[in-house]
Amino acid sequence: MLIRSFALVATLVVATLPGAAVAAAQDAPTRRPDVIYVPTPEAVVEAMLQVANVGKNDIVYDLGCGDGRIPVTAAKKYGARGVGIDIDPQRIREANENVEKNGVGDRVKIIQGDLFEQDLSQATVVTLYLLPSLNVKLMPKLMKELKPGTRVVSHAFDMGDWKPEKELDVDGRKVYYWTIPKR
Image (cartoon, rainbow, N blue to C red; front, side, top):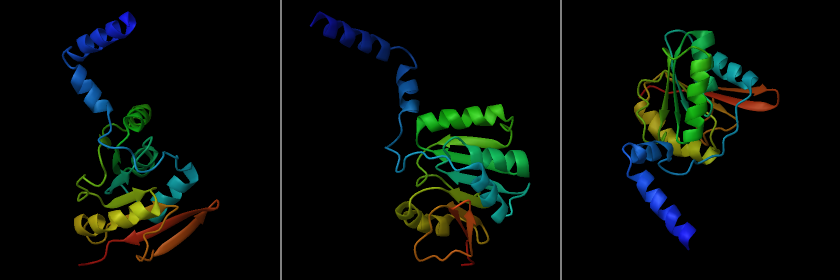
């Protein structure tokens, strides 16, 4: 009982320290991630960026960015700007470390947030490695916020009734490609 009381008091003292609540809030996801993190293999990253014809004038948004490998590669190899969005604080730490390690902090921004709540309107390319149900759920947001001509690339999963313009096989893994149509 004494140990339990001490632990409670210690927790209350730490929680009242300036910045403690802010630090805890920044590390807590706004909700549980919709998918488990599985890194996209480098060969698939390359194929996704190549099929989207990524170049120096592009802004690549990676939704569910994990360790940030797609926006980092887009910046480092193709000269694009990148934005990675992930809800998981651990993935955000890894992505920021990857950005720093590769020296692309001037071209890549990592955002901790819910991809369904982020403004995607600045993207010229959107990359995904989500689940089919999430892709379908995301499709109306993509159609509403993205400009016609914006390229969308998904690793492994399609978008239901929206038929891809291109479908690649990369070492046994699927890559799907679409363009946002004119309205």
